Every structure is written in structure tokens, then in C-alpha cells.
Image 1 (cartoon, rainbow over the protein chains, first blue to last red):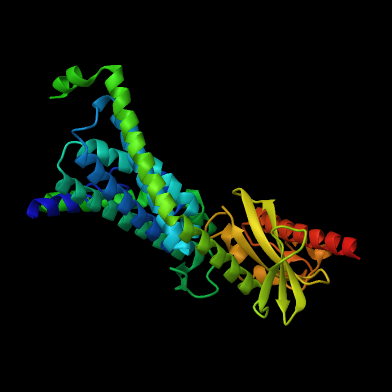
Image 2: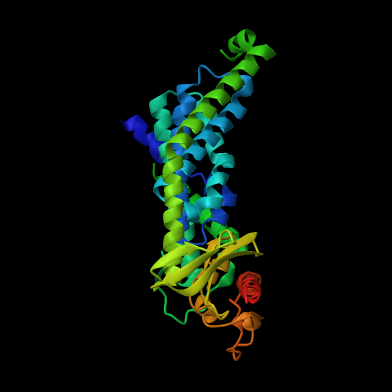
Length: 201
Length: 188
């Protein structure tokens, strides 16, 4: 169990997809203008990455290594399409919010990277935990960026007013440049945290 | 292991077969899910459309499709026409914005709703919220102009930082009113 915990937790801090591996920065910028969008996107990615890791790991002996990349993409695209159809049928309002971004999940570098680096070389259960951990790290990172950007850019968090009502919105935080600046600071903070954790152990 | 694998399986035929099989399986999975969810999705979309129209014209008790015009609906209260509901489109900052506007028979905006847009979250998507939205109520086509002058109460105040979206939404609503005006003129 300890082994699986280690696989899971590495996606959280030491190999955080956004802050350490610097992957999928594009969606991290595009979707994190509000905390609610950020967390829904994070959870969708978490689901797709875990499901895809399981599928890739399950079929890793059947797949010809020469065509593995197209096959991984096909697998991711299938999972995303199924998620889209299910959301449309059972959570249509949420689907309307996420419509544009859901299709983008197909080309998220982080999902393909985990299939290639981990799931294609490990058995099903570790791959499951790897996907879950990476997805969790991604979701937490998205949520942190989303909360800070929404708070500074709009004075709200999850749509609730936090700052005083005459708060002058810092427009740049909602726009992509503000997102980049913030991610830069957060990458720096994660570096310091990781260095500290390493020194202590 | 990698080498061994390649010797056995690297003929172009086997590679093609491998990829084809994967695509076939994923195609079948998607087809099954599509087939199973189709009815539910259609029903949900109808529900959403009805509830959107109900939000636009809350005091209507029935919505009937307008004659001769597809996609147009009439909001009716006790057999009396209170509004036309008309879809329209215009080009915003991030792509096409689809609108649904409720217009009274004398050509004034009753309410509008944005069905689909790709405007910047947290900025352009404020067009569907207050205080921008309520500015339209009771206004007719000639007031559908975006202004940045805070003293001008007749026209539509732009959302700060999202002028393009404000203009696009205003134009979309204007198009809907003009369509209605043309339609009513012809009917006379």
C-alpha cells in the first residue's frame, strides 16, 4: 500500500504536472479565470488521465510500439468523447460551461506523457494510482491558480464576493499575461518547497 | 525486449492491422454510447430550451412555434400574444455568439439570453449577467448602440474591458428586433 501511496503523492508536489513538469500550461491559463471552471476542468482531466492510464496499461502488450502514439491519442479521444456524451445526457448545464474546453483535453500533453512514461511500462494498479495522483496534482494546481486569479481579478471566489464591493478589479489577472505571471511565481514557490522537503529528508 | 518486439511485429501489415483494430474498437465504443445517450440528450436539450424560454418570459403560460418561421416561438399568456422569441447570431471576441431574444409585439426588448458563446470567462461572459443585461429591457432598435459615456442612459453601456463583446451582443439583439419589425410590417 505504501508503494501505491508514493506513486499517488508524487504528482502532488515533487512531480506536480503544472508547477514542476510545466506541462499543459495552455489550459492552465485558459480555464483558470474562475475557481469553478478550474476545478471542473481539473476533475475532468483527473478522470480522463486515470481512465486512459488504465486502458493503456491494460493493453500495453497488444500495442505495437511503432504506432503507440496514435493509439494513445485514439484512446484518449474515445474516453473524452464518451465523457462528452455522458455529460450532455446527464449534466447538460455543466456541459454547456465546459463545451469548448472538453475537446481540448484530447491534446493535453500531460495525459499522453503519463501514458508514454508510466502506463505503458507498468501494470494496471500502479498506473491507476499514477493517473489519479497526477490528476489530483493537476486539479489542486488549477484550483490554486483559479482562486487567486478570480480573487484578484474579480474580487470573488466561486462567485462569492470576498473583497469589499468597491474593489477595483485587476483586469490583467483575468487576462492571459496575469495568468503567466502568477504561474511563474507559483513555480518558484514550488521549487522552494521541494528544495526544503528534500533537505529535510 | 524492445528489439524482440520489433523483429516480430514491425511489418507494415501488422502495424496497420494493429492501428485499425484499435480504431475499430474505439469506433464501436463511441457508437454504442452515442446510441444509448441519444434519446436522453435530445430530451435534455428540449428541456433546456423550454426552461430558457420560461426564464425569458416568466409570465407566459405556453410557447408555440410561430407560423412560417422555423426557430421562432410565440410566448402566449391566456391565448394572448405577449412576446416573440427569436434566435440571432453575431460575431464576438472569441467566435460566434448565439442569442435568444424575447421581443414584445411593439418591437421592444423584453429580455435576452446568450445560448452559446466563447467569450473570455470572467470578462466577456459578463454580458449575460447584471448590470449589463437589464439595460436592454424596454429598449427598441434605435437604442441598440454601445456607448462608453456613463451619463448616457438611453443607449447600452459597454462592459469595461469587453467592448467587442458588448458591441456583438448589442448587434445580435438589434438584428433580432429588426427581423421582428420586418416580419410585423409584412404581416400588416
